[in-house]
Length: 113
Length: 117
Image (cartoon, rainbow over the protein chains, first blue to last red):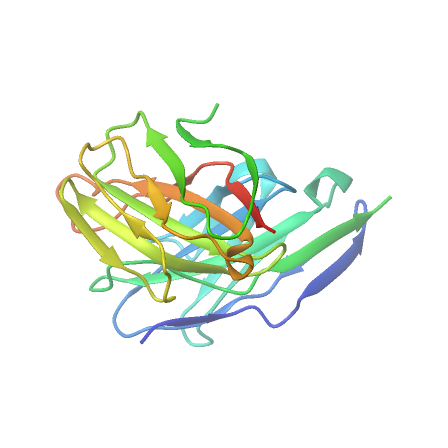
């Protein structure tokens, strides 16, 4: 069975500071990893994905994520946070043989002005 | 910007009523999904479809049913709504990437927020 853990329900960061939203996963086989963002009263929007290749993946809105196989992690990062980045962030994983994504429980990011 | 549409956006309905939540996508995606999400909480897959006339139940047991008669349309029906069905319902779609067995990232609709009184 595959699973995703987002250990922090809430992350607060000051505007202009770097941000990190943590994600660890468990999957048999090669992982396919995704980050999605959800703004209030909206559906989820795709940010970035790791399938294979470079461990550092760049995505939308200046976000990036680092795949670490030994630590089974895929943390989301941004060098300089904006107030508009405040939203709910979901990590998701799938394996090559799995038929669906498994989502984490979400992390509420609040960027303080 | 959305290529996947859900209607209605908000619905308040009394117990015992039959309701259908609509979901349509214009991208020609073969796969479609329904997720249930309580506000600010994780997503739970309740139904999915890999193509026309193909539907399966997801991880979370649900009293709802779905149908997939056309590629672009994936409605969800509750025969008799109950207060426990109050939640947000998110529809999503994806496609199989050419030459692989992998799926594209999910495209989500904006959701239907259902309240059953």
